[in-house]
Length: 148
Image (cartoon, rainbow, N blue to C red):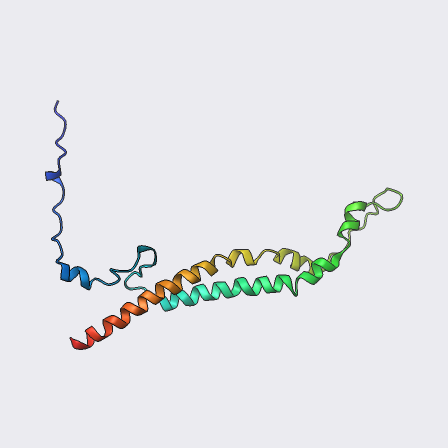
């Protein structure tokens, strides 16, 4: 048995090569690949969405550190509860469940909520750089479109 012939001649035909003038006309040719805008994407919208996520991160962080920190810090009885473990002075369980303030419970559940939205901040910075190159190229393309 002979093995199948796998040679470069059996590959798909290659596309015609572009001339230097055509390559120079390609959008975003001189932009680094990491911040190269993709054609057909409106980076104003991308920046607005990352800005909204970043604003939520800052808002939630501010809420946690100012308004919601008071009920959590003010609870203060956590240390006493840890020492008693629900036992009364005689060592027996008193059978009563302590009521938990809903605001304190909400504040404890809200802790760390800003971590969900923190990744939007570096993405916002990245999208601002990409938008800069996108706007720069789109302004360059407008005069060419007017000539045609």
